[in-house]
Amino acid sequence: MNRRIPPIALLTLIVVWPVLLAATTTPPVPLSPPSPLILGVEQLSSTGWALLVQCPYPPQDLYIWTKDGALQRPQRLTALEHPRWRAQFAGSLPRMVTIYGCGQQAALMMTPPTELSWLGELFLVGLVVAGLLGVRLVKRWRASAIPTSVSAPAPTWYVHLCDEQGERTVAIPSGMFTVGSDPACHLLVFGADIALRHAHLIAGETNVQIVDLASHSGVFTGPVRRRLRPHTPTPVGEEDFWLGATVRLRLTRERTR
Image (cartoon, rainbow, N blue to C red; front, top):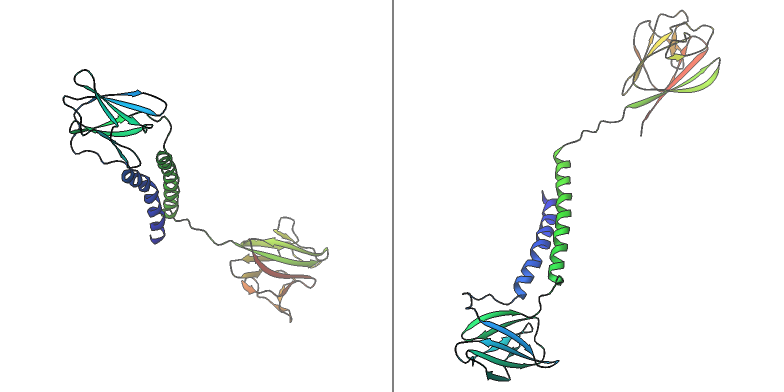
């Protein structure tokens, strides 16, 4: 659970931070909606602008608030036909200004921007990143909610065989296998005294047992060639054991990777 807290906090910060930044950089909204004012803009020159305001009385308190925080009063106020007034400002008006006049407040959008602002772009990027992180977190949570049991790899046993055909190595998995001279046996060996079904090999996860199937030449184990009792499973380690007098076998184990 503690590993999920930093991604969730980062996700929340990416989504919320652009909104908070935009909220702190925008001008305050008036408590009461402004009364409607008839506004018009007239360009006097390349740098001179005049604002036409229709007010019922002379707007002596008229001024504009710009984005950089500077308050501008009109340089000249001219009365036109009642109740229309011309307030002349020097310089170029910004794209968005807040007009104060006639005791009320109104907002004038000079040229609505068609492109996204950097705050809008940042907000969209935040939404995309938040969505990708959310999908990734959901996938991780689903994967952790479904436990996957991984079983240990089954051991593979190797039989190193030496008979009349020479030396060779045969890999066998866990299970029971028949050893003899019969081609139908799992492990075919060649020797003059090898019975058709000479012995059984029982390979487990940790050990191997050999069973003499009452062959006439017997099964022997160890350096002193101790003969095994027929039909009795006998554990064998990584040592030589003999089928009859000529066939030698050795078992080793290796786990599959």
